[in-house]
Image 1 (cartoon, rainbow, N blue to C red):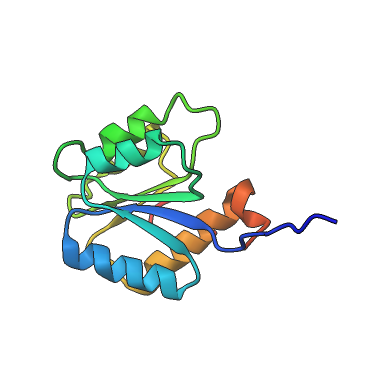
Image 2 (cartoon, rainbow, N blue to C red):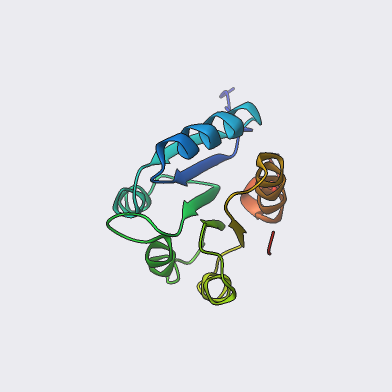
Amino acid sequence: MEAVCLDTHPHILLAEDDEALRELLDFALTRAGYLVTCCTNGLDLLERLEEGDPFDLIISDLRMPALTGLEVLETQLEKRHQTPFICMTAFGDRKTHEQARSLGAAATIDKPFDLDKMIELVQDTSLRNPKTSQTTGVEK
């Protein structure tokens, strides 16, 4: 009989150029039971996605060095199985929210945000994702 390892911790790819916020989110999401991989800018995020590692959720700042979160999100449009993408922004005007939604974002949250609201948004988004709803999911 072959042993099977079932990973019950959804894996989040987090991209945030602000070190303090990145570390805070990493800590809070890890405490909430998620595996977290961090990126410091949009180019790093795109490279991680192109490596093909499976992620259950992507959380990205929209304004970052190298590439914006929206530019990275746009590269994911052609993917057959698009990973749910939550956008964070300190510049959350209506146009930005609409643009993120039109590119396939599952949700957009304005900074500053309540950490509990972010965890709730992550849980809700994870539950809507068929890949993670079996293992576990503001503007939506």
